[in-house]
Length: 536
Image (cartoon, rainbow, N blue to C red; front, side, top):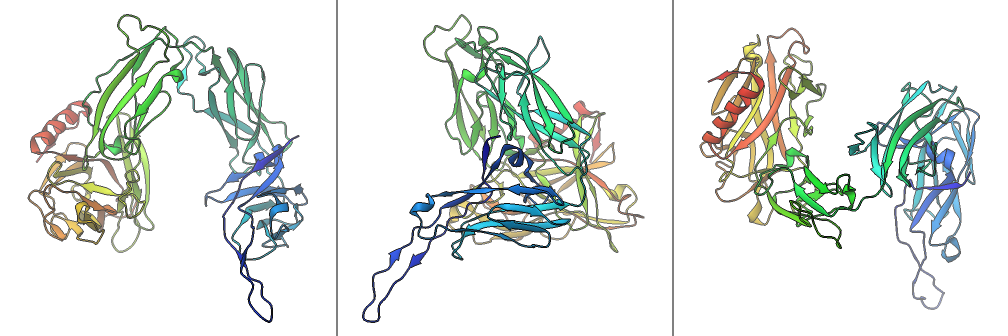
């Protein structure tokens, strides 16, 4: 089996060698050092690598097993001042290594590193080797894919000739020694598949089974049938929805544009999609928009040149969308809120009756329970650092609302609900010096401007930046943006509930609005859709 280049770590560093004589110094000569060191191993071994819950790259082994790695070094070792590579194990009682020959000694874990013989040059490749005393065999393999379309006739996930589809294997049980599989195609003339990555490539029209085989020698396999369709060049395109002037939020995450091509069955990936500002919106080869930053963005789609569009279709379409600063429309669809209080637990769930997603929080223990969670919208590069920022705009979107359960209406003798922030600064100031911080509404808890009780036991709380000040900094400025790198919904001081489980609460959505009329219109629409009534 051929060798596979498997990149684990490559961190460049610089070194200088100084030479001298007794009489006078000799000018320093720059050393030629490695820029990258990469592990090379067989496909079978490369397929065994996986990422664990700590985001560490792991290579699993069984006691007594031996694996052989080599290294690819750039530049070529013949050009290096220090060409020698040394192999080191962090614990030789668990894993021994000599010139790339790795031996599993006993159960445990040790890091194997390949680096230049000279120290502190900062260039190395490493992997965490986890050794099991005995093999836990694979019992079954389930396969999923990332296909964007289903073939209507066969019901199979499909892609076109020349396109790719990513396969993913779920190994059962979860405790199996080998957490990955090696891939093959039942018919390589219809689709090939990379044995390590599981990326299938369409080669000719037809159905084909992609096979994942367990790496433990058990012979357990999983099969997944896909359909490869022939390439049909589109000659015309038209939109099936109105998008010109539409308003979106980063919390909307993604939206698949609805469009039609001629002739029927034309290959969608042959359409060329572009976004005028890819820092605000990116768009996939099949017309899926991903919202990242605020701005007005023109989306364009073009079919290949060389043919005349049929009636009702055009050779290109173009429309402008708007992602306003300070506008948020979160419905737990994209999981922007993350747990913040140590010991509490949050998970996303779905209510089939109302059709709503929600975040279910079990607070932590203590004399009083607490379950805060932070808002993490997409990365917003403010010029100072890359982080997750919340942007508020008092002038255009002053109304801030969210809906969650009010334990005060469910038996709690005490509870504190609030919005808490930190490091809020004015965008146009040219500095990220903290101006606004603390709690919205002037400090303390339960300082909303208005609260609505809902028929399902939840409540809607409303804050108004045009009428309420910040705890530190006062009123937000008009005609400017304020950036917060810490934006949290706090739920604290929960008393009178017998256990954290009985004090669990649901969070449903987070919105900003231009004015109260827009808020009221939204609440009417939401109530009609879900059947949940509300009153002040």
